[in-house]
Length: 545
Image (tube, rainbow, N blue to C red; front, top):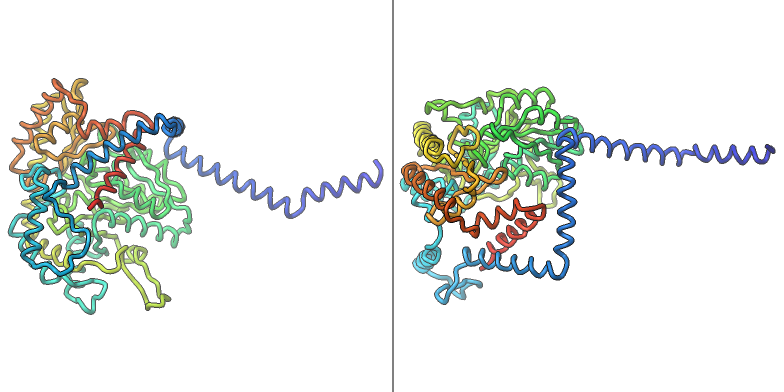
């Protein structure tokens, strides 16, 4: 080899090891390593078979969606969606020559008498809809009685223009809000903790997700946050994660106990985990996760544990005193860092109020938004909203003062007693159905064990009988959230349910709302997409004047 050739070879070797090439190589290794690490964490959390199943479902879904885009198929799909939109509008939007639409401001203001009369007319236009006053609605309306309603309305009237954003202008509202939080912290056994009121359970959950994200970033440097959530947890956790850019590991629940498997939760926790979740009780089947065991995991891995008590609200804290068995779920459990409680459910407060509670004030500070450099002055707010309706806070405070501990205890005793009665009667008298899990409180979920009885058919028949039940997925099931209005109608519910099971077995229609919507969702990989489009049409219809 000549000296010239050796020199060229040396130059090439040196160029391969130039700083730029080394940087490129390291960058490649970093990208491959981080991607492989994410894949490993995902596989560890979800498992190999579920991940492969998810991948297959996604592939089939994409193929079907491509097929839908074909002109002939697309026309059929659009026709069916058009029919669905019309059905939704027929149910929600009043029609006819007698219906007056107020699409622009009146030229001159109307009198209070005219306004009340017009409201009465709009109520009459909706007479064909479910009558909640007769106790046939699952949850939705948590009515504390006519006397309590008058107290709440009086509070509204007194504080109708108040705004907690200005505590110096409305000091009484500030005081009432602080006292609402303090009362909730006390019944959840954390009188020295901290909390805030929100507009409802969804905001309480989103605030907790935001708080744990910011806490993990400040204390552990986590910039790619993840959370571990049971499949039975409320959709608000997914909603919060979507808003806040957080990866969610959804863990399927045990089909028998309806609790989240602890081993699966443990495998899903990694260095980016900010929080895990448990419910007491969950919305779908009203069952309670093992909060004590979840608390141990949270302590072991130094992550947050949010216990969703939105539906359990003013039932769960009173179960033991009411004489019903209950597993630990509140701040007495080590590892619990946050609890959400809906005062507007079994607390009988006006709709639009909930409380998010934290173990201590230092954690709550991560919920706040503070902007000290805004041109409009220092801006600070405890939750998503800036201005808030002080009247709702006053109504909540009034409801809690009116009910008192004894009132909530008796309410818990009667509501849970009715739920237990429904569950026992289904078990003893309707062999075609079975109860999901072991619900401890106010919700009873049931599904069909008989091949000739389709659960959604039963739901549609119950709708024809005036009952408004909630349809569930995985498995196809129905649930009733018992309220004070339901308590006196237990025997009627069981009698109608027996008839509905019999009719669904002998004369299935296959055309009801539940059968069409939820059956489509389970039919194939494209089903959820179609259901999503129908749901979008439903949301559009809400704003059709």
